[in-house]
Length: 262
Figure 1 (cartoon, rainbow, N blue to C red):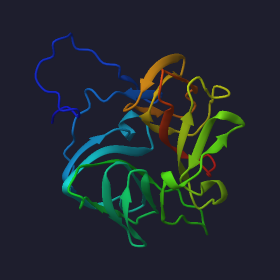
Figure 2 (figure 1 turned 45 degrees about the vertical axis):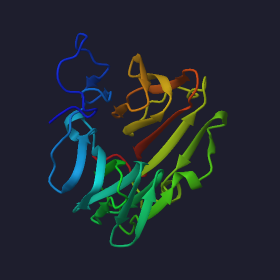
Figure 3 (figure 1 turned 90 degrees about the vertical axis):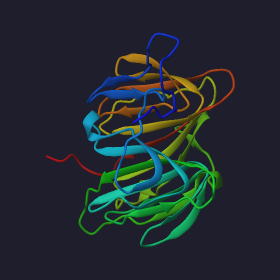
Figure 4 (figure 1 turned 120 degrees about the horizontal axis):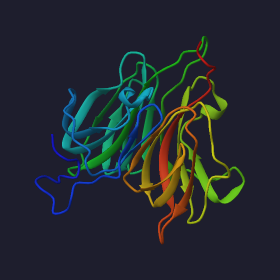
């Protein structure tokens, strides 16, 4: 294993980190210090496991750099739903229903037990954000494959705030066959949530641009592009977008459309 950012050997300064781990509450992982994980099925890929049940999540998130010719023939598996988002570059993807070439901002959602294969045929590195979770079935309902690109979707005003916008990547808002959704949220500088949220849903969040002061439980914590955050159920959460130039933008998952399991 080596550092995700390829920093090896000794540092000039004392060892330090912005990462914070409060298992079954919240986790912040900064890029420095993340390691590459060797995982069967990933060929020509550098893979880092981000969110996992080991921290309290009901899902798994990954960051993968797919080198030229790199591939995975079966992401997902029996009983699992899966999602792939292209952060940078280009990959060819396929499942039992569809195949496509995805560029930056492109994504594919694959329903329960339908694996995704991907391959980098572009000749240059591609960077992916990956997600999988065990699907919660409801009798008579099911999800379906969704392929799209966020760059072709309009921003929608978020909860009546003109300086905060959202994109819903999946049709979960009107389809109970989906038990999760993926969103991209954008805060312009100075924008914030309208209130501190506290809810049963979990989030896995990867920051695409900008900086923020994020409220996690009872702490205000600085975050920025490249950070990953996991929020467990009922973790109080809200943020203010800060900085001088870039809007705060992040992609995040949310379980939804199901009652409490007793």
